[in-house]
Image (tube, rainbow, N blue to C red; front, side, top):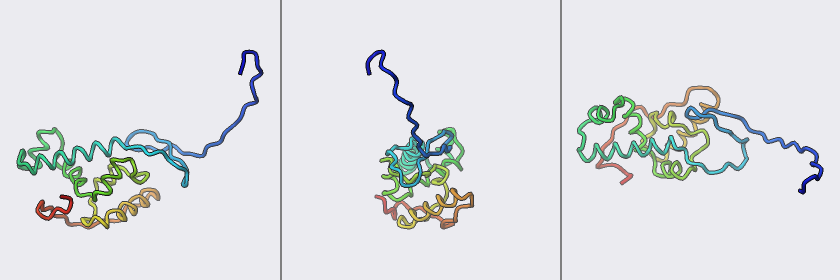
Length: 156
């Protein structure tokens, strides 16, 4: 365009999207089928980093109990326990989060809930929780009893 050249007619472009709140911030959500850019969720990545750091501190006997570690970190033991559950996620789920390939709508709130112990069941559990949250209903329960024994840990 040169100076003095007439301005072309205005063009209107309609892009379907909706604004949703995720983790206290607003985010633009594209319609189903639209290609979304890969983007890591810093809230999920930070939570994973904390969880694995805390796990390492407990396993190294730097801290004897979760309560002791929580007091040192200045957080509630119940919160720490829920975040520590992230260390039990299947490696492919953890990698997807770190690479920004996690399912749309996956939140820390969902991941802090008790998940199935078996890795192959976790993906379907996440799908059920996503569908339930999208429809405003309560998520389907996962297994109710959990035990963790580092000697039986499949992730090592």
